[in-house]
Length: 130
Picture 1 (cartoon, one colour):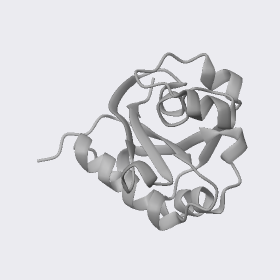
Picture 2: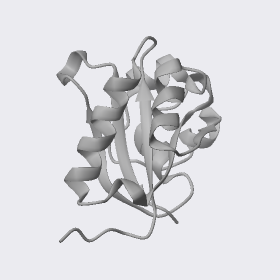
Picture 3: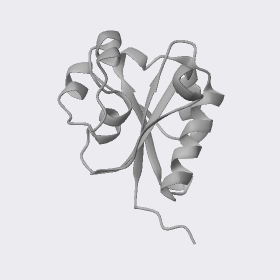
Picture 4: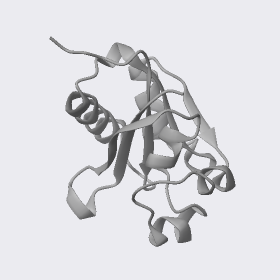
């Protein structure tokens, strides 16, 4: 039996050109790791700079949830367990996936995970909504 929190948010980071299939596969993997049903997913969340990435937009459409974006400065203010200076240099915040999942409050259920190892183009973290 799967026990699911009321609602969760998947924070997603993506390099340019990441396709919806990559995003969907990782989101589904992270949901399964947390023992959360896809029906509990309230939104995909990311940094403003990635809000028009076709892979993210399409993944949100397929999942039937909104793609919510936040300014880099707002995400940079969210304490996260795994900040990255490389991400800060690329988009202006040390975290996209974890910070976007946590920005509304709540608790981190799954810390950021990457798809395809170190060369992957997508990261995802899952948080219970605040």
